[in-house]
Structures are given as C-alpha cells and as structure tokens.
Length: 404
Image (cartoon, rainbow, N blue to C red):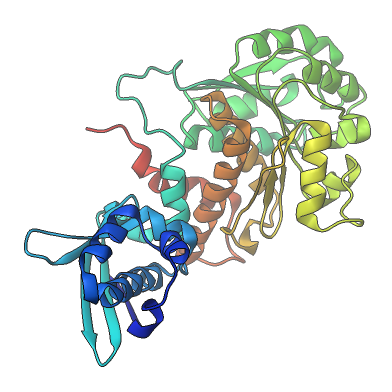
C-alpha cells in the first residue's frame, strides 16, 4: 500500500486566473468547482491537494500530464474518488477536508494486481495508451516475423540473447541466421527459434556467399535485426551494405553492424533504427563532443532519417521528425556485455508487430530498464546477468494481455 498526503492554502485559489485553472483542472472539475459558488476556492484547493497527494503516493511528482489524465469526481453519496487511466490501475481511497484556511487530502493506493511491483507507474500509464493489448484471436503471423542476423564463432551468445529479447516482447516468429560454425550451438539453446545456418568464411564469420539465403529470409520478415556478435569478417561490409539496401522491412542495426558501417550510413528512405552506445555513435559520425547529448542524437536522427537509440545512463531515443524521449528506467547493472543484444531483439520484436520505430525503440528501452530495476530488487547491480533481464520482462507486460 502507498500513501500520499498534501496540504494547501485555500487563499491561493481565490484569485487564480481562468487560464491557470484550465491548466490544472479538467473541464468536468471546472464545472463542479464553478457550481460551488462561494465555496469554489475551497473546492479547487481540495482538488489540487488530491492530485498532489496522488503524485506523492506514486512517487512521480506532479506533472501537467497528471493534472488532466486523472480526475476528481464524486459518487452518489458525495464522496470524492479518482477516475482516469492512471487511477484504473489502483484501488484508491481519497479523503478531502478543509479547516483553518487549509485543504488537506489523503490518498491511499493498493495495486489491483501485480502492478504495485512496477517502477515508474506514470510512464507505464503512458505506454498503456500507446501500445495495443494483444488480440485474443491473433495467430503467430499477426504478431510479426522477425529475422535476426547475428553471431560469429566467438559470439554465439549474442544471437541467443537477441532472440530471447524478441520472444519476450511478444513477436510471433523468430528466425535467427548464424554462421554455420555456430549453428548447432544456437539451435540447441532455444527450441522456439528457427535457426538458419549460413555459409561462413572459414574464420568464424559470415561469408558473402550467404547473401542469397539472407535475402530470402529478409523477404519473409516483417522486421530485421542485424549486428549482434557478427564481428568484422572480411565480407562483412559488403553484407551490411546489401542488408541496408535490400527490402522494405524496418531494419534495426546494432553492435558490429554499426561498427562495420562506420560512417557509411547515409540518409535512409526505409525505416531504420540505430542502437549505438556512445563509442559506436561517435564511429558512425555522432557529434557528442560538439553538442549536448540530447541535441547530438536529435541532429543525427534528423540528418540521417533514422531513429537513433543512444544507450547509456538515461538512454535517448530520437526520431527523424525531431521527437525525442529520455528514458528514466534502468541502472548500472545493465553495463554488461549482452544487455544491448537483448535490447536490439526487443526493438525488432516491436517493429515486427507494426509499432512505429520511435515508439518501438523508446518502449523497448523503457521495459529493458524496468526489468533491470526489478531484477536488482531480487539481487544486486554487481551480480546481475543480462539473462536476469529476460526473466523479468513477461511479468512487466501483463497489462498488454488480451482481455479474457
């Protein structure tokens, strides 16, 4: 259970302008306040205190968004209660009292189900309005087909982690293309994956002779992830150029895919998501030294017509139209090899399900960070493994189950 308490002076609301009231209260609340006549300032103060107390209970701080997404209403007995998207996640209790020129509100919250375990409840409320629930009548093809091109002799785990991230984000089918030398290792790890052996160059990397089969897999995919663990084999630049220019499915480029392309990523006409850390961002031409982090990512996204997810503390997602999202979830336990592979698979899964690339990248980063935050409560940042993140994702996505 969570509790929030707030006290405000009623006099603050006696001379408040209509413009300010419209920013704070919903149309229904304004009508209720106006109907109170001489007691309108008292009522307005009570409503404001209620929302402030709710924000304290949530631990989120009072934002303009919260003012209008949650509304104070009254039942048939005149008792106040909350209505709205955020309030629907909780069993709420609200009391408002007035005494000595002050309005006092007390809010208690009890989770309707497991949502009390969710960090950042306000952000979850936002994404619940953006991402659709599952369709109860859907089949696997409705939920998207993802092709992941990943792995090399020394990095078979990257392909496995990327596929795990994809499955956990609800995609319908995952096909993993890997060099033949690691095919058995990857195929034996997860029975859900369709694992396609691709011609390797004898040194553990993909060969250009694999391109016909790679094109075939891209033709059958709703989204493509390329890069995790691919390495820098002698044919990789040609392979990456072909993948970048072949097909129309959204393309997520991560890790070695970015390293191989370096500064050769040019203005794109298809949907492309780049998922670099800061070193990779610099290698592909990001100007972190000449501009603030947010501005640098935004400029790169606009100039390249790519969605860019720059990983790190407070991951930034920037879209070609200039929109940006700064992620607040996550912790330094994510700073380990393999975490980014999982994230790339998560982004790809959402893109394969038809979610717009900017939302796919930002939502994946948010869920990825929340999974790490939940995992830390059960262990520690130091002891967290990337695979621990995979175990927490399904619990976080319960809201998106189809209605029963």
